[in-house]
Structure formats: C-alpha cells, structure tokens
Length: 255
Image 1 (cartoon, rainbow, N blue to C red):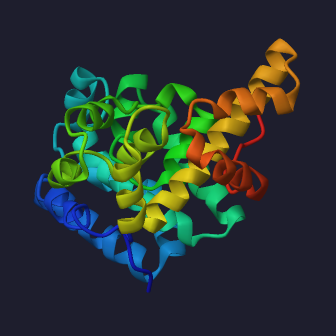
Image 2 (cartoon, one colour):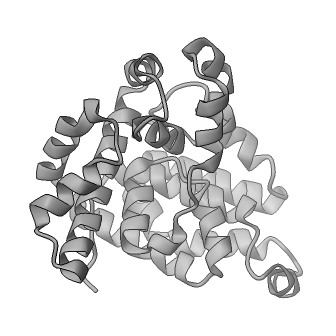
C-alpha cells in the first residue's frame, strides 16, 4: 500500500472534502478509485479512463449538461485527475509515460479552459509539470498563489492560508525570483520537503524544455538558453535546479 498525498496538513484533508462535492454515485466511484489507488496503483492506472466515464455518467443529463457547459464539471473530474497525481510518483518512468498519456488523452478531449480547470486540481508536481511540458496551453497559472505571497509576506501570516491554494503552485511561486522571502521559502521547504523536492524537479523540467525551444527556434546556444531561463528563479536555488536538470526526472513525449 502507498501513502498519499505525502505533503501533510493543511492539504491532506482536502480530498475528503472534495469528494463530498459529488452526487452519491460519483462519490462512491471516486472513493473506490481513491482506495484502489492506495492498494493497487497499477490497477488504478489501468482503470482511470473507465472511472472517469463512471463519474461523468453519474449525471443523468450528461450529454445536455456537458454540451451547455462545454465539458464535464471540473469539480467532478478534477479530483480524479488529482488521484492520478497521487499515483504518479510511485510509478517507474515507463509506467509514468502511460499515466501521462492517459491524462493527456482526457485533457485533449476538453476545451482548453476546461482542461486548465482540471489541471488546477492536481497537486503532484511531477504530473503537473509533465502535462505542461507536453501541453503548455493547459497551464492554469499561479495567480492565486502569487497573490497570497504578495498579501502575506511573513511565514506566520501565510501559513494559515496555505490550504486555500494548490500546494504545488504555492511552492512553485515561492521559488520564482522576488516572490517570497528567504524565511518563507526556507520554512516551507523544511515543513514540506517532498513537495519542495519534486517542485524543483518540475522547475528543472520547465527550464530545460524552454531552453531547448529557444535553441531550436532562435538558434540560442543551449547552455546560454538554459542559464537565461534559470533567471526566472531566485538565485539561491539555481544550483539545485542545475542538479535536477542532470537527473532529468520529467517526461517529454516524442511528437
């Protein structure tokens, strides 16, 4: 059995509250899938698409409602993608590719805005990063996280409000240049080391991917492009990101 979300409070209790937002049939399916993901992540991966269909079919007027809303309710399907994120870091890289393709197949079937709302539910840095690396248009952004950091500059002020935003996006916003104080970032990294570590993996994936794009499209030498993209992040973590780039834990699917 695996344990997740792994990040600790204040976020660990959010899955239960999210599931209460479903109707009875959808709640039953999501709860079953959540438990299956803990005990047998490989089986849960295999059943991801069918579980999504069951959740969507819980609405007796699915066709009409999804047509009017231009897609399924992200508050129903997003938590399912979030559970996929909990499975994700427990899989080997080849199996993660399968999970990523399944996730992208679902998102590709949606209107871009609806896809972004689904991705906004995902808390796992590796899955969020791999989705964005392969489909940058599904990036939901970190506006809410950035606003929190701007409003609450001290750790004692910020901590009570962490639950109101995504653990990944608040951590990502913290490592960007001039977004958070060293005190806030250091305290966060101490309390949530696994989240912080995998967020640095995500930053490494973004840095290298965008560097390769600059190299390909503009002819910028790869090492120069890499250093240029590193400037988006606070200088204190540049060496950590460079090390993470050498580990290459992200997945860029062949196109």
